[in-house]
Image 1 (cartoon, rainbow, N blue to C red):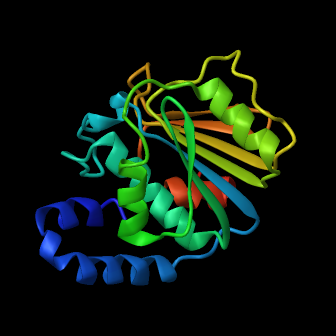
Image 2: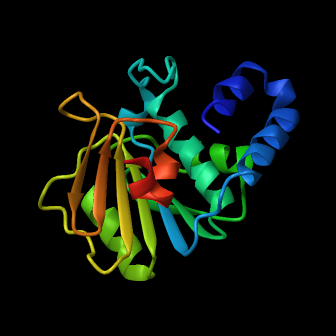
Image 3: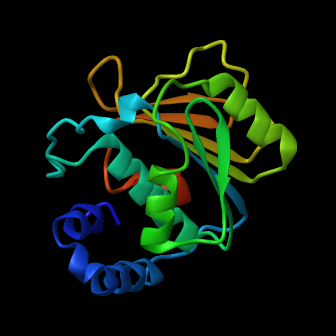
Length: 193
């Protein structure tokens, strides 16, 4: 979906055709089993471009990559809950495709990030098999994350070290950087690694 976001921004009159192609493309991918929560950082730090990388995502903003990942996961995970976070947590429901993209963009002012309370609020309210957090902030080591989930992934679109990489802590994996293989890794870390 992250390829379709710049396309629809450049050609808004073709949104219906582009969305149909995006959803058709997602329908060919293997599903993500289990109950999934996707938390999308919509803070001001997400409004800046991703660094140009070998995958060719030059000009794509962090928020575009994050929202594209959320749109894709929503299509692949039958039991999926989408949230935005910045100054507060907002659940986005009842939409998919470009409507989900727009709902995430417009869900709240793009201000600060309160990652600790967001993780706590989402994970304490409901039980999830998988929690995916897409953010520009590298989580502090003292961020309390639930250990009773099967798989947690934090995708950091602005790694402090400047280098892509993986870090594992219990059921949580931190992915530093961006790749279109993120969903493949979430589905099967052994296969992609």
